Amino acid sequence: MSSLLDPDACYRAIQTKDVRFDGRIFIAVRTTGIFCRPICPAQTPKRENCTFFASAAAAHEAGFRPCLRCRPELSPNLFALVGTASTVSRSLRLIAEGALDDGTVGELAARVGVGDRHLRQLFAKHLGTSPRAVAQTRRLLFAKQLLDETSLSITDVAMAAGFSSIRRFNAVIHKTYQRSPSELRSAQTKLGDASKTPEITLKLPFSPPYNWSAFVRFLSARATPGLESVGSDFYQRTISLDGMHGVVEVRPVKEQHYLVANIRFPKVALLGQIVERLRRMFDLDANVAEIITHLRCDRILRPAISTLPGLRVPGAWDSFELAVRAILGQQVSVTAATTLAGRIVETYGERLVIEGMSWGESNLRFVFPRPEVLANADLTSIGITRSRAFAITSLAAAVVQDNQILTNFQNLDDAVQKLSKLPGIGEWTAQYIAMRALREPDAFPVTDLGLLRAMEKLGHPVTKTQLLYVSQAWQPWRAYAAMILWLSLDSSLLPLQEELSA
Image (tube, rainbow, N blue to C red; front, side):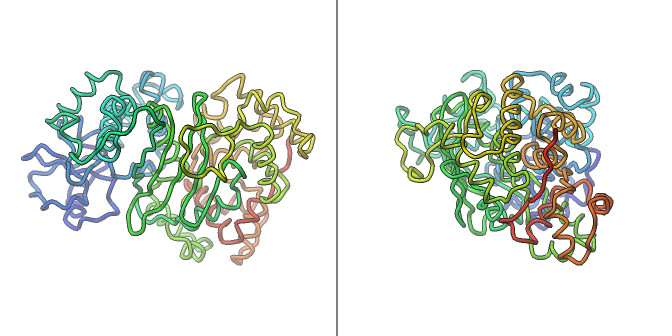
């Protein structure tokens, strides 16, 4: 059990079925050998029979099996639970992206800038288990969700969940649930046609509240024509992975604590990666209640927070795409940047090719250009200024040379410092990339004119230097503070400012 858990407080949470603790604690019942979410509808077990864990992985590693009734695989991940333990948060994100599918814990530790032993100690302290156990439980629970919610074959489920062999998959499922994968699956589930590109529908759980309207309000103004489509109740976009094309669509579900993703992609082995990208893009792992409680203590932000419950920080499907978009947004309006992004996609992007396309054909026509294409493109021919064109082609060339240049950072300061060394990327752009693409919760583009205008509107006019000082009270959640300030104004105008670097 994690050293940070208070057993008495945990028991009170399960007695009241408090949804705020879903994903923050898991309850294992020694008399049944099962672990549950705090919102499980089953009768509350006796206190003396309960053991509490900070993660599903810790409960599973201790020998308990997941409850088939409350389905721990649908609990929110809540990376923000560890608060300022950013090393653990960053490691969890990398594990979710598959860092331990083929790599070692030592390699993971090196990527986050700590030693192997220290990383294991941090995981034991905050999650009550090891990095390897987290990765194994993640594969298991994702496989269980696929069995429950899709018509994929057993072989495809194993591949999509990251298992190296069908035999290993069958053994793990049987050991955990005491039944085979086919026995776990509903009798009503019909297998799909293996000859067609599968359309997968999955639930993407989150910890409430979730401000969908504010989220799509931000994305709508920035939707790249031909690549994305945004409405009041949906987000669609094209995707490209391993040279193959696909389409994803995400929708909210009224009065439910999950979004629904429709995914059409030909290679099911990449399904886990697609789901993780969507979770990051829609900021589903944020412990928004904890974040807002902290920011609400600030008298400046309090009035704006009250009008934006459940606010999230919109992420990005792809870090390179977001970085290009950030450069396009330098010193121009969001509308102008969106127009330029559309030109890039239409001129240099590949035409969307996906078998049996049944939705989105009219709006979704291209995938974002590959870095090697933009590295050699004459962007001035489509109306992009020479300095900005040079910044984009230089960025693309750098990504071609090192495909991890936009993702391999040890912390926020390291990311901003390395990004700022690229031509045409200054402090604002680096912070914006860190905020949306790298999911750094404390990233804060302090030079943004929109933030200064929002502060003035709230009755607290400040200079850039003063804003930096004021923002220290919002740490470690300054990215969320920035979103609150931006959305307190007209989101179609924001963010507003960046100076080109030499």
